[in-house]
Length: 77
Image (cartoon, rainbow, N blue to C red):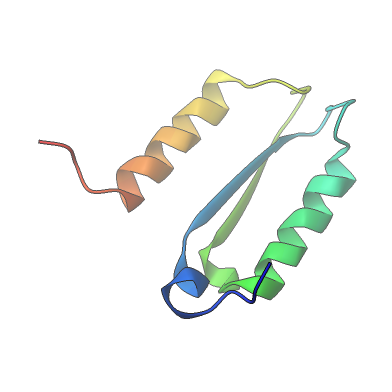
């Protein structure tokens, strides 16, 4: 529960949320991303919403996750 410092302040974060999620309302996702931006470099925080998506995932979301991983993690040989 200590403060975030050093290299951890620069960690890239992707947060995804469906705009029709009945379990975790979009408002809570928005509040979470704003809190994250106050804790780490806000330029490294990406918040994506998906129209019509409930508390689940979608092909579009999985493609965004893949792009995020490809961008931020080194390739495996």
